[in-house]
Length: 215
Image (cartoon, rainbow, N blue to C red; front, side, top):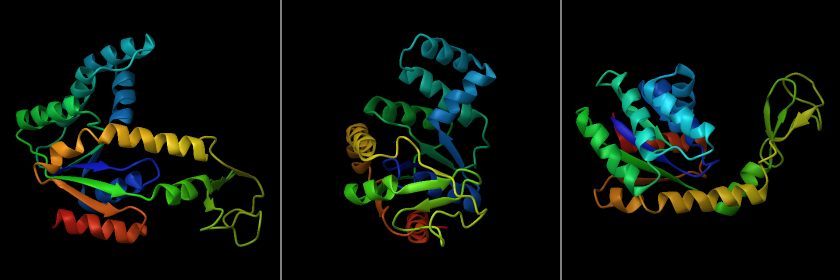
């Protein structure tokens, strides 16, 4: 089974992809991670990508497609794949069709985690972690049992990610809408798109995704 998982930053894509990997033995293909890995490995496509990135330019669709192709070639045909961060444009969507067809695969589902923007801003901007052990907390939903003291290790030092602020989150949301808007109609016309409430609990989202994918 081959699926595309869509959703803005903070919607829970990473969490749900990890569950699909552990529960179903699927493989998550994240273009950002794959680019870095290909560059590090010095593969032919990785060397091309490195030259482009070293020049401060954006990696072309051809290079991204090449890296996706390399990753698919390394997998057994019966291994399910989760595409994360790809495709982002109509051209990439059409390229993915070719990559899959060439390898006797097909796209089965496109699942979008829908979110409420204001609620997502609250979810992300409220996050903080223990600076010592990394335990996660939230201003509203998960505060330490003793104010200012980590439940796990007792540390009193906490930190927040610098990009977990409202302006950045809303910018990311706008970018996501701009990038996914062109590809959703392509897959909707094929009857492949399903939507899940990304604001529900992690367990409820997982259950909804499993209901879409079936056994």
